[in-house]
Length: 310
Image 1: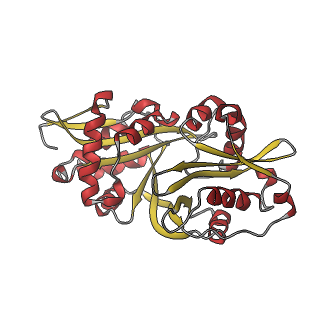
Image 2 (image 1 turned 120 degrees about the vertical axis):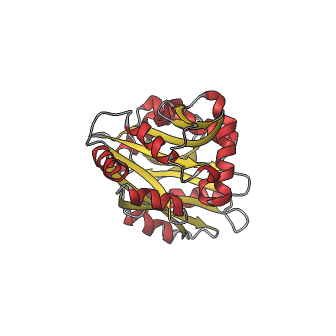
Image 3 (image 1 turned 135 degrees about the vertical axis):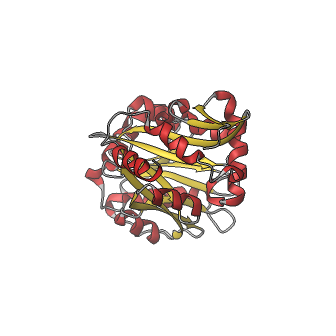
């Protein structure tokens, strides 16, 4: 690695430099960004990121040239560390990504800890990096877009449900956390949320709730933007799935936001979640891109790093 490079923890004062780093990286790899300052600040507030406590930056002569976003997620039966490394284009091929990875791997002690990372197929440098270190492809996130919502068939169970936007997100946080933890438990990106953590997460989201007989059956979290909207998460209580409730919930949200060619809706869904993929297709969503999910244990990454670079 370049002798002028130092690796250190992220600081609050790095925010503008991080935004500038993403801007440069996105000019070469569009899937990486750009990221605005409010988006970065909101990202750091997510419970799993804990203010960027485990993030690391690479610095040369006082200028930020690399970033490792790193968060340890409680997945119930075990933990996983999620990782993303971004290096400014002019500083690549100088061992900066390797140095950032070393510092992240040094945070934990468990050799069996799973390390996951997402890499777009359109990001050659990222794909080369995971290949070198022996990450295994364990699934993909499919980016889907809807410009003309298709109304689902109306089932009796769905017809009985009340669907509305939550006025007080704090009041529904515990039920949203319960349904989320039950519905996503088998997902590779699963993160177990407490009611308090979910309340924090919902503070920046628009929350739609489906209820039956006074009890929450499902939810949809959305993030409206100026010319589009994102569906961040959709879940139905496993005990109430398979009755058309999820489709109706999403359709109501799409209709409320008047989704169209001029105002599309986007979402990401796991390639391993065949039922969800089927539902979204029925609602008018179409695949647009694929982001690959890779995984390897901490011990495997250390062994690969030692064999290739020592």
